[in-house]
Amino acid sequence: MLQSKPIVVPEGVKVVADTTGWYEVSGPRGVLKKKMNDIVKMEHTGKDVFFKADGVERIARMHMNTVKSILNSMIIGVQSGFSKTLVLLGVGYKAILKGNTLVLTLGFSHPIEYTLPAGVKAVVSSPTKILIEGMDKQLVGQVAAEIRSYRPPENYKGKGVRYENERVRIKEVKKK
Image (cartoon, rainbow, N blue to C red):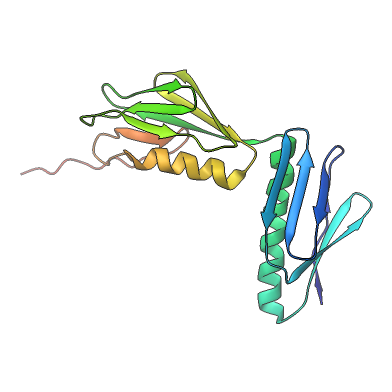
């Protein structure tokens, strides 16, 4: 039987696991529930959470570390949340927030309307800067990646939608 290093659960955060593999983490920002592999069992000792896994050592260790990492992200999410910032670079590229819909003008013949899923909030601080926030790390990253996929940065001028600190390698123009 393998045992992981402990995760320290901060004050105000509650972690509950049932026998079917559902993990529920509640904190100041809300509640997150996720179904994970039931090979891994969770144990509480005071403020620490340990994970134990049975089975083939290599596979059990993989599952145990995955569950530990996801649960750690859930704890951080219900405590402080996650955010990603997108920057729109290009002539006429802009974003407008209308209720729960993000309207993107990215150089196509029509504006793109992206409806934000539940649990994710967007803030448009300037027409070329979008801040995506939420508790679920995976969902925030997926929404940011979907918005970026509409117009990823191109290699010659760098135009497109990119993450705030993303470095785009600019290619040199081909010469005759």
